[in-house]
Amino acid sequence: MVTCSKICWREGDTVKDLLLCLFGVPMALCAADRFLLAADTQVIEVNRQCRVTDLLEPRGHTGIYAASRLPDGGIAYVHKLGLAVFDKSKRLVMEHAALRDPMGSEANGMEVLNGGSQFALLDSGVNEIRVVDRRGAVVSHTPLPNRSADPLHFRYRVISQARDGNAFWVVQSEQNTLLKVESGTGNILAKIDLAPHLATSAAPHRAFAVREAANGDMFASTSTGLQLLRFNRAGKYLRSWTADQLALSCGYFLGIDLLKRGNILLACGDYHLKSPAASNDVLAEITPSGKVVWRLTRGSLIDQVKGYVEARTGLEELRITNVHAY
Image (cartoon, rainbow, N blue to C red; front, side):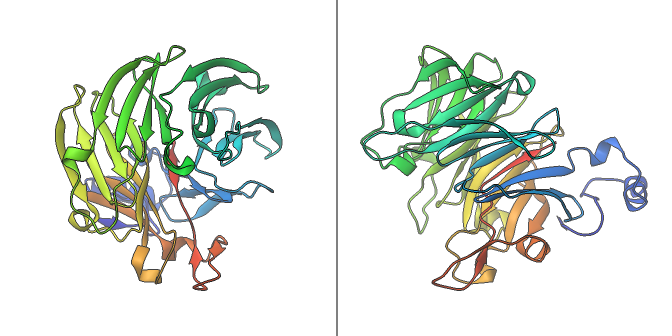
């Protein structure tokens, strides 16, 4: 396993690959070496050398849950109150607000569609997915099962587009369920119940993220339960890993992205820190067989960006919630 260092070498690369990385020569095996991290009040771009290569610090937006680099160099992200899109010069060019229900407003997920010409917004407050264009105009609505009886923050979490393109995967957090819903109609095409496969944990499990691999396998995370689960394309449980089994120092298992080489990127949140050592890992690359081959630590970032200082503890939290690799 390789902890983030001053080279972009990963376990499995050859000596030739290592030398190429050391001398800064671009190469295919160091592809996807940029990671866009959604971090509560900011969006941080880092490379495999642990260097912060870009930073977006918008005003007035908190609860940034997911962010994506757009093909034109801009950035789109979802924050608690809606969707925001910036051009490559970091100028805000579009906003689309979450809608309110009696408990308030909360948008929890976003997916970039059609090369950045459209965006899917997961709006938990009204139990629906809205697709909007670059002007913020609504293109379509997809109703979701009504979870208004659940706490607003735990109704729905991450959204991801299904491989077949005409459906979305969403996470019902409080229910620990993954749903595949047909775009437009909201018809339930598939359902995966995580509950029978959850390990005993100190905190209640709450499902957080889901991603579908190229071969149809599904990877899901539970936040407070600190578990990564794998299912096949038919929804059959294959196996899972806890933070202890992966030897990760994480407060939460949060967002997931998948690399072209097949490995999983897992964002590890450091919310509610009791000590710096309690959540030393903020991002990990994991093979489909459950081996950690690269990690990014708090210590490598804390001197490069300004996090959130928790008043009760005085500890600085990075609050990384999700990751987009490119």
